[in-house]
Image (cartoon, rainbow, N blue to C red):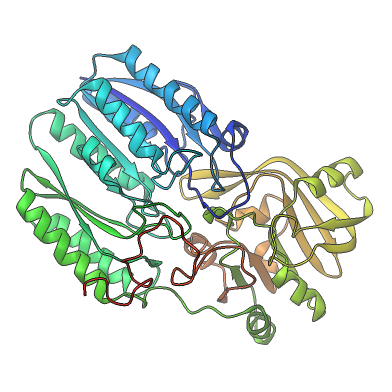
Length: 485
């Protein structure tokens, strides 16, 4: 067997002012054929897992390019087309192939393309023809369009949020692909539109129980190969935004359709109950101060670079400063200019510095402080499960009992190693202020005495009922109360 694999992925917040070109991919991951590292990024596990599977099966794996950019705004049209065409030409050179196994995100939007993944998958299908297996792993925070479903044999999405399972789901993807290529199964995909958009953390009920039910059904139901929830991505203003259910069966489309609808309607019945309680910055700081011990984690949930925002909001930090709170570590504030200044000044320097709140309105005001540059780390990385997430050149600065990590490559706060790689012991601080909606939970919950979810400022379109969508469907909850009426 000859199988082609590649990855092309990012998550696009169409409301974000941060434009994306090829440099953004190069800052996060751009690997030409055969150059992908041993560890995967969030959306490139099909490549690393494919190496293991094809070596075991004695098959030939042909690797194309792998590109991943940290979430931001619209991708430049030329950049998307260049990256797409690069992979298509690699696939053309690899022909004939028996299968194509891809790593995608699913929430990419480019200038002139509401559905780049649909465009890309259609180009793949046009090239390989109707009989070659085409499948992909998706992030659940994506848009499942009819064009994508028509072009692919099947999709497998991460089940967990935080996405701790992206390698396991790549293994599921490959396991189905191997069985299909050997003629043991015929994967058929059934999709149900849940007519809603919500946030579904699996770190709490009811989504924890729902996902556990999916795992159980995959094991117990005959003909069921995979079940996935496409959560949808509410910051993507595209025509097919929303939550979907995917059932992949062994040539049982009727069973798949019935199961997808049953599960989808069950999910809809629990709408509005999934997200954790959030408080404003005043209540968050009150609770952190009152906590008997640390570290208390304050998660700035909507200034989350993982959702396409800048990650430079200062609303919560300003409240901590105003209250005179100390023993605080902040990870991170994105400010490449401030990082450049710190690197020029050098470790140990004491300098006046303005940082943060440069990207957008309603994210606070820049912070002006006389700071000490404690440590400088070029090309810093933190852990994220089996992967590493770069956050660029980074500077640890301190003032008034507060430590702040400034970074040059936007990245959400995945793991406490964000602090330790900079020389800060996260367990020793009373308060840790981080930027993430829920991906932080798996790792930070292991050291936190308490976690506070804080909604501060308005850097992210987090209220679909009032978000000024131009393209998104209007007949979904909570835009309308009863989309089934």
